[in-house]
Length: 248
Image (tube, helix red, strand yellow):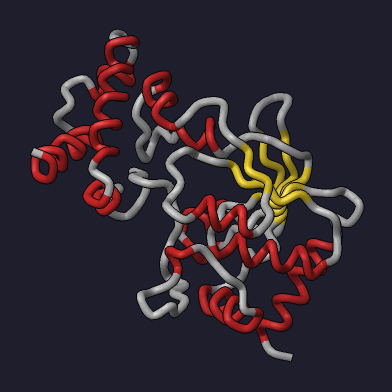
């Protein structure tokens, strides 16, 4: 039995502990979500695959989600409504995540988190399950079937089982590239702070600036408004720089 076969067997064994509990399968549209979706299907348990729409989903993502038969949950507010209401997100202020992704649906949830994706994840996720507390009344027991999987494990699994992933994971020749990532458009948490997305979709620059300006107008005395008020530094300043260079 190969190392991957052993990991597949172990992952399915963990998923089967949820048999009869009908957990949520937190589907992001990414490669790891496609892996846990396949594993959950192989386990034979009943589960509820759910995609939390962000309104800044990468092109092709929603079509991919629909092709997999995943339930799509629409948010109460769009991303730019959140910006106008709560301010601009950054590395320390992930306000959009709390509104668009990090909320409870069911008591149990299966997630495609892998510890080797980043040092932060390696430190945060050390066990195959944990209790996630969203509020005093909202707690979810989360399970991570592929926590110890490597990029090679994911690539081998996808290729072996012929799993179709989102368009972003394939090069011009249709070859699967496990190193690619799927994330919200123009996300400041990306390695390039969303610059590549801004260049490709310049309309988002205008929307960021408009949303930030409206937040400042409506929250003049807040700390968040003061931190971006000059519109010359940080992420919003980057938006202006791109707007000047690309749009004019």
